Length: 273
Image (cartoon, rainbow, N blue to C red; front, side, top):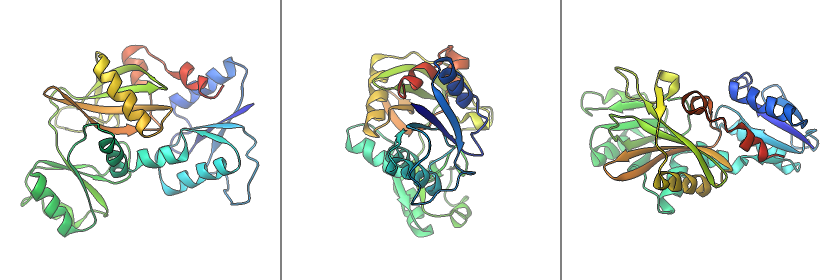
């Protein structure tokens, strides 16, 4: 058996992928790091030289999804699957799936024009969050506090865009790391001073978060709804309710390790061995 670690120009040197490669080597499992940006993809390709793949790319762009789908058509099992990653990367689709399965989600609209954006914001009421339908690392995400004063932002959006209620998070949001049926740990992500986003890419810090049975159950359920074999589930607490914000189907886990000392790499590699 040979395992492919599927990366791109953004993720090829990430710590997480090096950890996966080291664990595979420790177990004497043949493996190869495959950069899909330097590997031509065509509809006739049937031999990737691998039996199973771990998808570790930066985001769910059309090209990345099609590359993974090409592998699956050729008989390679991809973890997480191309469908799972596509649904996880599409913020609106994933929230629709979560809501349809009884999980609490923020009030959310997808809009395709200035006019529909204004209507959505008016219905939700400010403050609201604007975010691209596809995207990672907090890029292209804005918070609108006053519609009249910030109306110009709506003229500049590359539609379609997500309009979502803003849920205050004085004490940060929560990332739960799930592998299979198990929540391995949770961290609380705190936004830096003068910033409201809790992405590590904008300077957020993390602290240990108690992983209750309720929190664990919600995270595992959210992961399963998207068909993920492992995932990072972002959750926020409002009063006594846990609201699922997003399911990351190609999650980083360095923050989990540095904060809790929990390295999920062994359990991730178990998925392919």
